[in-house]
Length: 203
Image (cartoon, rainbow, N blue to C red; front, side, top):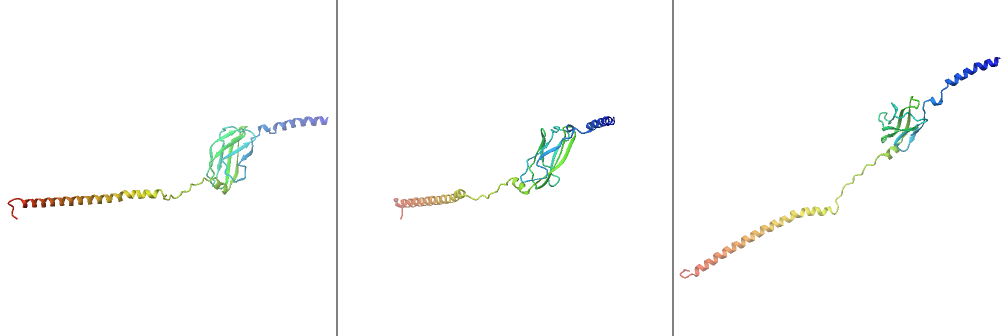
């Protein structure tokens, strides 16, 4: 009889304990992986942050966000809207331009409707930042080529050619003036000679 009474008392207590125990289906979602991994030191600059949960978070849930803060504690590098793909939630990153430790602060709505949030970290090396930096074009000084030098001579030659032309023009005018003068003198001499040969002219 005592055993029967004891079993009768234990059965309701065990049933109550099972009812009060949390069901796995009702538990909040948990983060099971991340890229970059929490605490990782990276030799290459990441282009996105990818978080993977054990269940699919509520897509577009109010207040969902992934914020990536730089080593200065102020600059944020997340770029664009969150992308939900089943249990994966990701966001693109703007180019990381500083070596040091970065924080990933996330907040998503669990599949059971409750928000979950946490902060992860990763470190980017100086070598990774240097390798990812765009190369600046090197400005080369332009040197005069052989084809450019004759161009300068060609520019000077017309001016030089104009001076001899002007001098030759002046010489021609002087020559013509001299010829005309000689012609006039010749005519005068011829007239004087003829006038002396006329009859009645006195010599």
